[in-house]
Amino acid sequence: MLSDITITNEQINSLPLLVGIMEEMGIRELIDQHVTPHGHWQGTSVGTTLTIWLSHLLLERDHRLVMVRDWAADRAQTINALLDITLRDTDCTDDRLANLLTMLGDPTTQATLDAAFLQHWLRVYHLPTETVRLDSTSVSVYHDAVDADGLLQFGHSKDHRPDLRQFKAMLASLDPLGLPIACHPVAGQRADDGLYVPAYTAAVKALGTAAVLVVGDSKMGALATRGQIVAGGSCYLCAYRPPSATDEIAGWIEQALTRAEQWQTLDVLDETTGELVPVAVLDVWTREQRWVDTATQQGTRWTERVLVVRSQQQQDGLRRRREEALMRVTARLEALRQPPKQGRKRYRMAAELTDVVDEVIAAAGLTGVVQADVREAILSNGTASWTVGCIWVDVAAWQALIARLGWHLYVSNTTEAQYSAATLVGTYRQQAVQERGFARLKTRNLQIRPVYLRDEQRIAGLLWLLVLALRVLVLTEQRLRARLEEREEGITGLNPASRTQVTVRPTTERVLAAFGNITLTTIDGAGLKHRHVSPLNRTQQHILDLLNLPADLYDRLAESEPNSVLHLRE
Image (cartoon, rainbow, N blue to C red; front, top):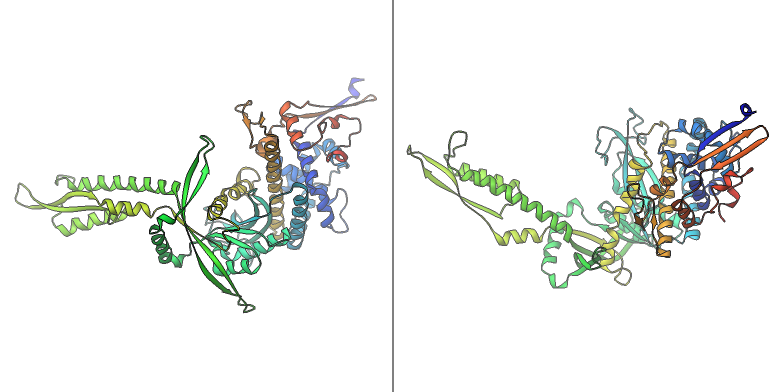
């Protein structure tokens, strides 16, 4: 009887792909090895529960605990087949996920998992480990007043919301991939300066070696931070811009300007023309440094290279801004050349007009560059009025101003044999990769804001979980791009605006989106049980091949008794 037949549809889309990726990464296995739940934990293992939740996070971009249960129930057949489990209705409840966050929020557990994941991925994917980048971001929350010693505090907001409490996330990542290897939540009022050494220590522990180049921004430039990195056996590269060294830095720039014949040039390849284009010039010199550990009174000495670098792009941008300011100042001074009339102020004293002229020029930052004199004019009624006479630009002063634009300073304890100066500057300029990771974490993809949790250990666990999701995105992207480069080919069908467009740099987000509208249909009843999965197109098949996943990963879900998990690593 047709009335005895039940037809169910599950919208599976990229779920099998994502589970296959995470199984390949060993996430479920390593979580189960290193996270021990309390004795009352039943049903799916911690690693299995986390895999389901991670899939929800990456596909739905929603970290609310209450949303996972229904989402998993709607895909129960697919999840059971992929993970070889029998999903219970209570396996993904918000209480259970909250307990999982409590376990993940433990700092010792996080450090253990960070090291386990990284060591596994280094063995499997042969990732570069020479460079570690450290940086922090802030995450604003809408919570009320909390413990004065707690995680959520007012502080300098990188979200431009000083009216909201926040916590900070200090991230250590592998360059040039931007792969997070350690992440620490810290109180929102903490200054960034003191966060670099703990992050460095955690990164070295996870890597299992101190033979790395540690890269950071100017907040890593404190002598104590640099000294501890050197004492730890590592190299460092950071921007140097301490507030107390303004005169010192200005002197170094003046010194560089007198040594133009010794400048080195940093060239990059223009992918459009195939030509090498100069992007910066460098003046390099060395100095001796010494730091004393206040705890042990042991001193550390090293030779430090100072890189005084002028960015051509930034100099050009600042030059345009100065030129625009020059035009505005000139227009303002031209207005002061006009004789007085109704609605136009009359200056009766030379000193009064001179003060106005000086203020206009100074406000534009062009003191000494723009010059103007004032002249007295006798009006028809016999009274005197002062106006601006001649306006001119001191060409030498203008050229000197432009020559001092766009300079940056970097310091490093590396030798020329280890890293050339141009290589160091090129390495530092990869900062955008980690900033992209922060953007994924906070806005476009993982949506850490708003935070609905109150318990601070669970907030720490949520941050770690979202950073794990970020690792999945980054590592998958790296694998795809490396495989395309190895094969010297591209992939089509990822851009919804142009399905024929070829790219050699696909993003994980676009890849996941390419598996849309795939349905698992089950017909059950009257002695009949049949499953059908929407066929994959060429782009989807290409993606499975690039990731070394079984070509029939989706087709296996249509088998009478599918068991996909045992074959995901074939």
